[in-house]
Length: 227
Ligand code: ADP
Image 1 (cartoon, rainbow, N blue to C red):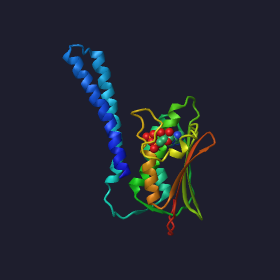
Image 2 (spheres, rainbow, N blue to C red):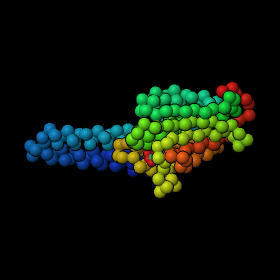
Image 3 (spheres, helix red, strand yellow):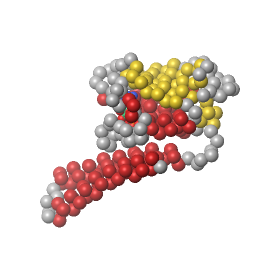
Image 4 (cartoon, protein in one colour):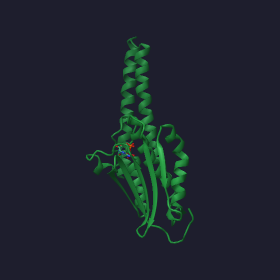
């Protein structure tokens, strides 16, 4: 319910901006004052707002899964390597060094592959976003997997300067974003939080070194798997 109200509110904002831009254009056209620069600027604004609305809707697709679909047995190491397979090239092209540290053997976890993939991609793209904004060449992301008595931990660290302490307590709230309009929806972390909590786990954000660290902890299931 909270999510639906939030989505309605968030979609209304770009729609209002679009309606206002259209009204302004109509008025200019009626009074024969709609020069090309004016129209181009307004259309650009409309396009940005459409992008924002589509980004919100894209995030919502994750909720389209059929309830009751059995969760699968997943290999955390494969999930981490798979997520880098999806976005690694893009990270390297942005000048980001990627380090991975995984154990040789690791117990599996239980979850929905698409969802876990979504969480890892959210965390990686957030790290990419902060690193992209900082000048200089030393940009790093480290992904690691740990299997211990407490279960499985997946850590994603970056050296992008970390999280403002003011933002830390609100990071996982739906629609909480510090990114510019059109850049962020504030849904990535809140959806990730929901997915990991559904798996019986936790996801924690903290500042670490000269960047941020996100730690996912999930229960391991008993059988052995090879990395
Ligand atoms: P969005 O990426 O659309 O803003 P998220 O829920 O994924 O939404 O993230 C919320 C906020 O958390 C971001 O706007 C950013 O301020 C902060 N954040 C997330 N990851 C990092 C990171 N690796 N380093 C610094 N800040 C981060």
